[in-house]
Length: 169
Image (cartoon, rainbow, N blue to C red):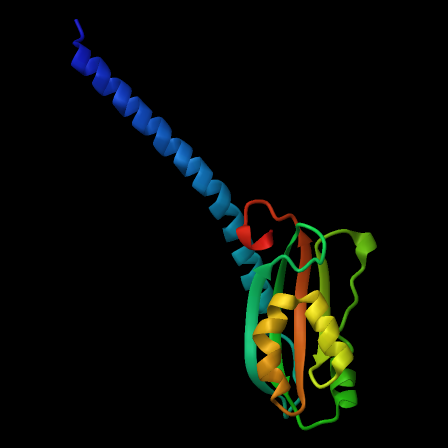
């Protein structure tokens, strides 16, 4: 015959196991999505290493981030941005990077891959940067605007579902 103590002990162990499994499932839901986005970010960083740069171009700062870069929706995006300087005129900079620059093709569906060039002394480019990538703008523009002949090369993949990554909401 089983004692009340043994039954109580079994119930406590069962409740502990159920609570532990439930907690694991909740944490796994969040960490799985965060881990997927970290893998996407690492992959994008590797792909941007293949870019050729102007011979006199100097890397000032690199920022990689995951976030919601859509102005009015819940989505997840990954960006790798390089703040660089050069002594060349920006027309030559633009012509050099022109083969890799892309516009978003929304008809193909997400993720939307794009490569953009922003000249940080051009008010129109700075406004567009602030509108499209406000988190990045706050981190990079102040240091970039102080540099003469600074430009920002951004590679982005946007349009992933936000799922449970809190950076994407």
